[in-house]
Image (cartoon, rainbow, N blue to C red; front, side):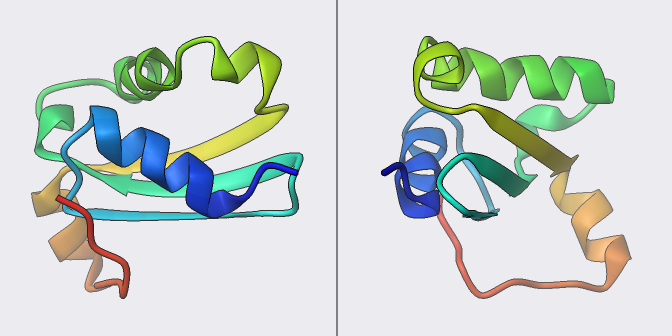
Length: 87
């Protein structure tokens, strides 16, 4: 069964993240992703970038992935800092 940690590793390997957390039950996953690469990009473009990193896994292994994507500046203004850091 697919784990949230596997998805975190795949995303972190292809996208520099200041914060990354994935939760899920093996089929449905939720991700919070903070990356400087998102600067100047609309949410759709941010999601496309993550889908690009995950590649064919989005069709074959990951059945559902919802995402919240932030730049480091947006994340700081939320007043929320996380425990898991990749980067």
